[in-house]
Length: 189
Image (cartoon, rainbow, N blue to C red):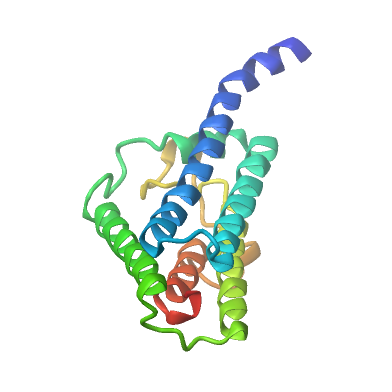
């Protein structure tokens, strides 16, 4: 019995490692873009942001690996029959994020908005962490959370009303919106 369980976990381990590597890459790309365009590496708020991202998403991935390996598999390899797939709903936000990171780096270099006090920067980073935390909580509570928008009939999908879903209908989207609202404000600078 123990041996067969180890065999079942082996493919899941590859999903875990792929997702952890992707998490680090997704933290390095925006930080590298901002550092490169700013022309300096000493931006503590960018290092903190990247650290928050890596720590919370690594926690999420490890928790899914431990408690819900099927959910981890679904997040890493969502079925392609989702409603939107790899289309405008994915490309547009990605282009906007790259544009945002580019402007943030150039803002650091040319000092366009040096008016945000330290308390504003810290508050912005706390709100980013809360947004990531809300997204993480939503993914951990909802066994049907997926990167692909679809009804999961094969997994017996049902409405989730526990945890953050008792407060807001789409807490994952709320967490992402909270995170993006701070990124788009000047308090992240």
